[in-house]
Image (cartoon, rainbow, N blue to C red; front, top):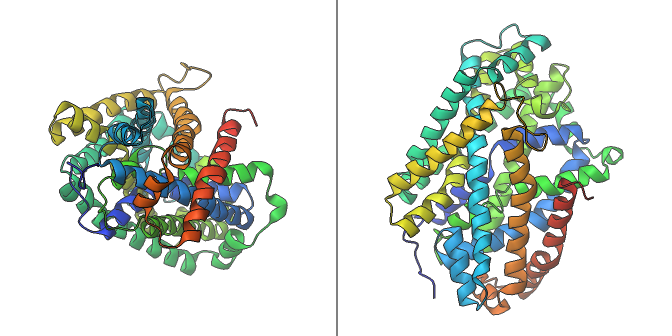
Length: 452
């Protein structure tokens, strides 16, 4: 039988795990990506499909990933080797753990660069950099930042150091203490921004945009986007939820805990939409602005609104907090593996992984300026890392999780770890994780690589 407690420690309470997993899930995907893809795909109708996908795909896979983590009580690689051995299966399933750890590491390398943009914008907003901005000025502000490799390197370095300092302190002293401060602070900041949006923005228009379904704007591509967003927003397939699950008490109910995390993550995404859309609409700006929504369009809106200096600064602090809680979960699987397999101290393991991710991140940030002419498969380093992780490694990891738990583990093993008291609830979850989730992930994967 696997150890009842991980050698790395354990969350002191179920709430600590919920905050940690929510912090992992709530990141740039909620506050940056969700609003702009909802804006581009008709608002309310997209949100309905997204919510359905969260329930049918995201929640079942999250439960399966936590189940595996708690069963193995180790890093994703060693967890998969241990559980596969217990089930009498091939050691080849350890590859699934490697995929998750690699995905998390690669994402961290460029995620830190993008989080550095948010850090830079905290100071730009706070120093009055948005005052008097027009559309050309906002684009030039963002473009000038991307064209400055020294500044990007400085912000990337600061953010990576922030991440490493938390993880090096361990599960309870580092991860748990950080998320119990940052996640509630993130939610409070978001609620303050929604309040500002209600007072100064076109809030009724924002509500209609976000929640009134316009099915004429819902294309097949929008449905696939909603499926992909539902999967990616929960940090699934990258080892983070699995390693966090390994620190979860044996007494905690996986289904209830997962449901709470999914609900919190979804609530943050919707609150982000309610904070952003009314502000944009009040300023006469379109919510369908694509990836430039946060760093080009939103500063324009803050520039035109009362107290925009203060609330613009708060918004980018919120973005940094969201990125920080996700980044510590991205580095943790690789750190746990080095501690387990090399006998390294946690400080040494964290420093090593952070340094390697930092070096790769330098390549990513240089691809935005001095290395912009160098491409591989017609993509710069940052775009290539994003494509490789989001479109190949994460769907592959999620698909293998569903395959392993749904088809290779014995039903008895799954039931004993999941411990769902209602028989029909287990039957429903088992059906979703065996059939619905893997088929949906496969479709998203085929679309991402251009085969659908």
